[in-house]
Length: 156
Image (cartoon, rainbow, N blue to C red; front, side, top):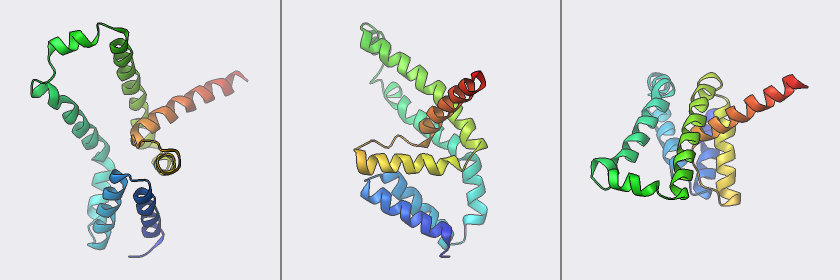
C-alpha cells in the first residue's frame, strides 16, 4: 500500500490542508480509500477516462440551478447586459469557456501536466492567498500559452 504514489498523495493532502483546499483534501481521501480497499484497479481507469466529463456536467448543473429555481430569468439577463460590467462578464465567460476547451484536450493528451497544474494551484493557495479554480481552466490557459509560444518559436 505504501509506495511512491501514496507518499505523493499524502504530500498533496498536507498541502491541501495547509492551503485550505477542500477539493484536494476530499479527492486525496477518496483516492487513498480506493487504494486501501483495493478498488483502484477497477475504478481509477473509469474515473480517469470519464471524470472530467462528469465533473464538467456537475459544474454546469450547479450553474444552471438559479435558472431552474427562477432566481435568474430573462429580466435578470437583460438587466445584466445594460452596462459594460455585464458585457465584460459575458465576454469573460465566453473566453474562459473557449480556453477551458483547449484544457480538456491538453489533460487528455498530457495527463502528467495535471500534477504541475495542481501543484501550481496549491502553491498559489498556500503562499499567495490564491483561489483554487481547478486544473481545467489552468490547463486551458497553459494550452493557450503553449500554442502562442509554439507560434512565436516558428517565427524565429
